[in-house]
Amino acid sequence: MNANEFCKGLSFELTGWRDRMYGIIGHVETLPALDRQYFSPDVNALRAIISEVEDSIRQLQTECPIVPAKAAAANVS
Image 1 (cartoon, rainbow, N blue to C red):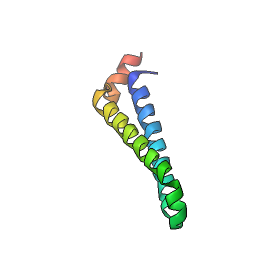
Image 2: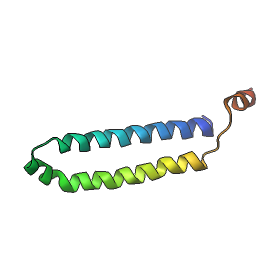
Image 3: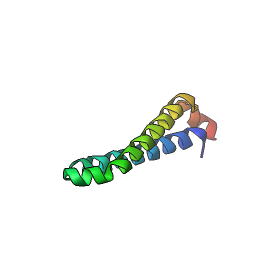
């Protein structure tokens, strides 16, 4: 696995986890008010985690080496 594949795969995984957490928050927001209040600390924790994951995704987008597909394919052989 080269660096581009790693970065792309990690970004894909992080994006998937972020989307799952947003889904959980969305589900909690549909609950009755008393239940939402009960889960409020967990939702706040998820939002903090989402922020960290989004920071990691942005970091991958700016720091990972990007090699055009044609150049990467030429270097494989």
